Image 1 (cartoon, rainbow, N blue to C red):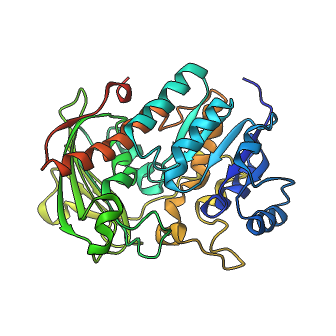
Image 2 (image 1 turned 90 degrees about the vertical axis):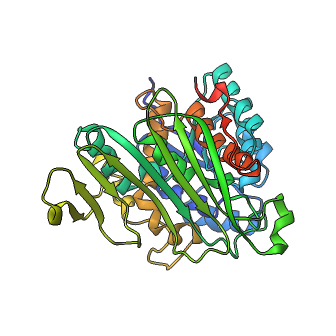
Amino acid sequence: MSEKPLNIAIVGLGFGAEFIPIYQRHKGANMAAICQRTEATLKEVGDKYGIEKRYQSYEDLLKDPDIDAIHINTPIPDHAEHSIAALKAGKHVACTVPMATSVEDCKTIVDLVQQTGLKYMMMETVVYAREFLYMKDLYDKGELGKLQFLKGSHQQDMEGWPGYWPGLPPMHYATHCVGPVLGLGRNQAEYVSCFPSGTIAEEMHDCYGSPYAVETCHIKFKDSDLSALVYRSLFDVARQYRESIEVYGSKKSVEWPLIEHEPLVIHTAKKPEPEIPERVECPDFAHLLPEEIAPFTTGGVYGGEEGEEHLSFTQGAGHGGSHPHLVHQFLEYIAGRGEGYPNAVQSANITCTGILAHESAQKGGELVRLPEFTLS
C-alpha cells in the first residue's frame, strides 16, 4: 500500500474538533479540510488549527477530488445519509455512532462498501477505552479462561442535549454497551429479546412513540454458547454517567467500577474467599500508538489550557483515552494494515442489535433475529 498520507476531512466541528490535532500529528494523515454549516464556527476552528480548506456545504466537500476519507461527526439523524453520500462519492468513511437509525440504511452502507471496496469504520469509543483494552488483553492472553457471560450498560442523563434527543428510544443509541460485549471476542449478535421498564416524562412520549425510561436486552451470540445482557437509559433515571462492560470467565472475571475514576475489580477463581476480589488500577494503552499521538490518551482539545469543554467528552471522562486509537485504527485499516473494528458488517450488527432490541421491547420481549447481511 502507498505510504502517502491520506487527505482527511472532518464534518461537524462540535465533538468533531477533538480529532483535528490527532490527525494533524499522525504521520499517515493530512488534515486537509473541515466542514460545518455555521460560518462562525468554521472560521474559528479553521483559524485555530490552520486549516485552509473550509466547506459550509457537504455536497461541495464531496466534490473535492483531493479528499480521500471523511470523518463524520454530524447529528445522529444525518449519519446514514452522510455516510452513503461519501461512499457514493468514492471516499472512505469513519462515522461516529450509531451507524444509522434504520436497518435499511445499515444495509445500504454495507452494500456500498462491498460494491466499492472502500473502507467504513464506526468510531465506537468504548471498544478502544483503556478499560476495554485491558480486558481484551487479558482475554487474548487466556487469563480470563472460557468466557461465560458478559454484561454492559450505558446510563446517561441527556437533558439539555440537542433537539433530536428527547424521547429517543434507549436502545436506538446502544452501541456503547452492545459494542464492547460483542467486541471482546469479536462475536456477532444472532437474535435479541428486550424488555422496557419505567416511563419518561409524558411530553417526550410522542417524539418517537417511545415512553420507556430503561430498555434491557438479552443478546444471543451467533455460533456460540454465550449470551450478554445490556441495559440503557437516557432520561429520568438517577444515575451518574456510566459506559461499562463486565466480563465473567472461568478463571477470572473483571467488573467495571460502579463510579467513575474508581479501580476495576478482578475476581480470581480458586483463591480463598477473602482474596477472590482485587481492585486493579487500569493501565493506559498509549504504547499501542505512534508516539506522536500517544499523549492524546490522557489529554485532548477539550479541557485543555483554554478550558474548553464538550459535554460528550467531559461526561464520558475523556472516552477512556479512545480518540487516538480510533484515528490510528481507521488510518491503518485504509492502509491495509488493520482490522478497522468495527467494520461495516460489524457496525451493522452492533447498530441493528439496538434498533431491533427496541422493536422487541415494543412486542413484549419477542425474539427478533438479526438480518443476514449483519452476519456475513
